[in-house]
Image (cartoon, rainbow, N blue to C red):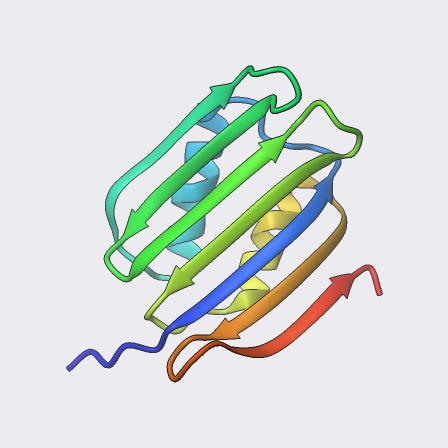
Length: 129
C-alpha cells in the first residue's frame, strides 16, 4: 500500500546554459521524472514567453504523485531558473540538483520542505558554499 510522504524541493538558480525552447525544457522535465522514478500523468507542457521583461521558457509536468514546474528568465545574465518539485513519493534532492546542473549552475539557493504535518523546513542551502 502506498503511504504518501509529502516533500517539496524549491530552487532559485542562476545558470550559464538555460533551456531556450519548449522542446528543450520538455525533454529536461521528462528526464527528471525518470531520474526520480515517478510516473507522468500529464505533460510535460512548456511554452516560450516573449513578454518584455519576462522572456523565457516556462513548463510543468503533472505526476501521479504531484508536479514539477520551472520558469526561466533567459534575458538576464546569468539566466535565472526558478524550479520546484512536490511529490508524495520519496525522491533524492541530490538527483534533482544534479539534473538542474545540466543548465550550468553558477549559484543556487534551495529549500527542502516536509509537508506531512505542517510545513517544516528540513534544510536550506546555497551552492557554491
